[in-house]
Image 1 (cartoon, helix red, strand yellow):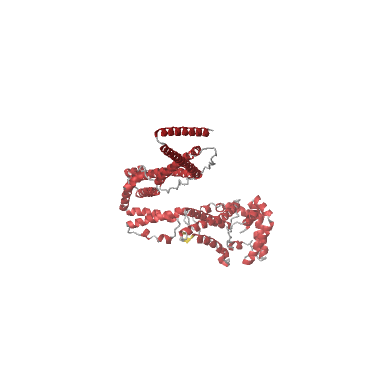
Image 2 (cartoon, one colour):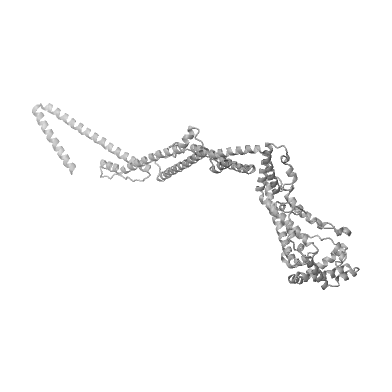
Length: 611
């Protein structure tokens, strides 16, 4: 309706203007001229409307292009921002200009999002560049076309956080390294030697690159090693000074006070100790012979502790020199240090071998007592005590020898040399001790007059530091032998026991003497029965109960005694000449077995009855 009204008005207005022009032109010009002007007017009107139409069509095309551009921009923004957006189609009743405005408004928020995202990316890239340059790390790429996704942006933020944490950690580490280096330099009394070291230690905004920390760690390790070496040198010099004081018996109070007051591990302490050490070494050179004599005393003591044999001692030829020099002094000090290291490194072996030597000597002493013919004279419960002690020793010896063997094996695997005691391999020495103990048992019994004087000589006990403290002899200390009850018996006690036996068996001796022509087996059986009855009275009630509990053992003992008399061809046990001429029997020492624990009562009977 509006269009029709405007059209009608335009036509009416045009008609009015054409009528007025024609009226004027008719009044002014001839008809032919008026006709020409009307033709021209028509051409002008046609040209005007044609231009107007062309301009309108161009405007329409521009609007359509803008709409297409907006559509393309919307598609690009949604692709970059990874945000889906549906624009749709233009309604038929909506003008192009309105549709253009609507499209422009709808993608405005996408434009804002894109600008913010790109600004954030640029900021993160700048921060990454700064951190990577400071830390010496390689930057991660973050593209802006297409823009990174939300997940990629989150990962990049985590990467930046890690770089920041790494920077904080490295700054703290650099601070600690600098403090450590400066502290060590203060202890050593030194300063930075170059501009590079000065920058490493004092520059405020120093890069945190791996090369920087490599240089700092190298400096820290070098100075720490120097400080450690300084500590070791101070301790070594202090120890040497104390040893020199003791050997020189120096009483310089001023020098000693300076050394005692210098307790810190610093360069000043090092200088004080070095000065005192040089002074003591000069005094040592002035008193060379006295000093070496004192060293020789200590070396002798260490030879005894380490169980060195004569051949090993003679290898140290400087020990026997009479024309002493500073070289001899150094050799004596080196020998003493070597012996001390040997003893301290294998102290457990020496202590265990010393205990083993004491146990071995005690075992030999107990075996000698067990073979004593007078062991039954007024002994009371001493036989049982000795038997228990013998069992304990035979149980402990294999264990301690096994421990020694394990320690020696470890020593040999490390030192690649055998472990010697008294010049002999320690394992071979222990094996030889057992072999020497078994050899007399394997030897055939002596006969005639030689049998009378035959005695079992126990093998020599190993010399140990503890054993050397006693009286010199084959077994070292003999205090355990002096305390044996058999040696402390009075003659009256032995005589009373003999009278008691005579009262119980008044005719035993005479019968044995008169009946020397009886068979050996019968005489041995009668005398052993008599001995069993006598021993039952002497050993007390407890032992008598044990004897009564094991009659089979008695029979075995009698049978064994008869067989032994037949093999040896000896006279009857009851004969006095037989007691005088019979040698001390050999006793086999064996470690305890499970059977020993199961038959304690029967074993006590055998030990008490065996000669």
